[in-house]
Image 1 (spheres, rainbow, N blue to C red):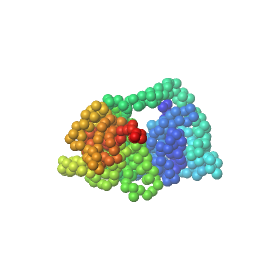
Image 2 (tube, helix red, strand yellow):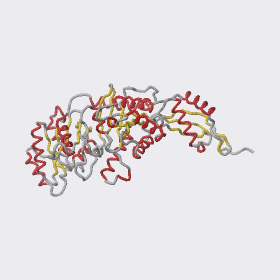
Image 3 (cartoon, rainbow, N blue to C red):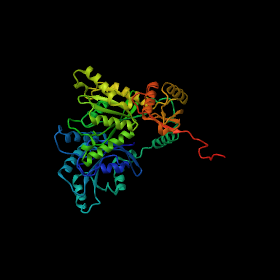
Image 4 (cartoon, one colour):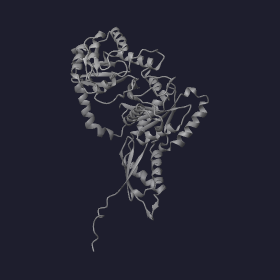
Length: 474
């Protein structure tokens, strides 16, 4: 991207709606409630022929630095410092407020180029607010409607004028290079997935989930070595699912911070429902999911439900017991946690569990090693020859049961996909295979081919009978 733009303004002026309009997706949560956005969220924006990085920010408020709103304002000020250009959004429908004038003065002192944006200009009676915006001393306001997409051409022209044509349209081959990568991925994507070798350089998507106040954002900040995400003693600070990129031993990691998920019965407000839905999308998009447990109160019912959700979605799961620095008898607690992990989560035996402390950084390197190891198992492929040899030995050791007096026959086995590992078994009467024998086969695959901690799927299919529909000849 050629340059970076930050969207700022007081709460509820339409910053996130404009962000979604520019990135072309509903990435940021939007609601009538003021102060929905809390963390700064980056995205790849497209405005006519412009390509740039856009940053959505929390609403600016005049409060003390120790409050939640004060920490949100600090995140916004970091975004202004990071950006090359600022879009200062005001509400033309509501008109200017003393806050708008205060923050207009703040932006003038920053020395960065500013484009004044008068949002909601399609509303009746918005002319007064539009003309009042001139009094901010930030130049001519650009009337737009972020919700309806009006005024986007004028906004594009204002951005080009403020940033300069040379910066807005750099002469390089970035677009061509990106096109080459996309084409290569689309053509070779299926072939790459079928490779037996694990690609150590492939970017890895990791989602961090857990109950509210389990320490997810603190954990990611410790990984990054900076206060990138908003944290504090209050539960439920994170609302949007924010992605951050960083390198671990030369490998690109895209990590998703998610909103804490409470029990479904307790989720009543619309905004919390939107946050939970955003977290669920992050789980489906991720490859490995780190489930953060509070080590002081582990294995609550919600913890187990989250783990079951991740495994049902087919994601690779790693357990992280956070706040380990608060545990006194660590060895006894660790033994108890490992026993409970095996007993309470039998769906994926061998789940990797790591004691960590997001506050002090204890165990984070070990956690990353387990994430990579789990991802390798999740991507594992087994040759058909090995699987059929294993199938033969398994039936000798424990033959399939007879159902209704007829013995079931397992004839052939192959792996149909990875991520997660899934197998197809050709057999007679697949609908009659009992669940107990399926579990026996899954546990056998897990033990014999070293696949701990990942969901394993087995599908049974009846072999075709070419004489099934023929009439008997007399």
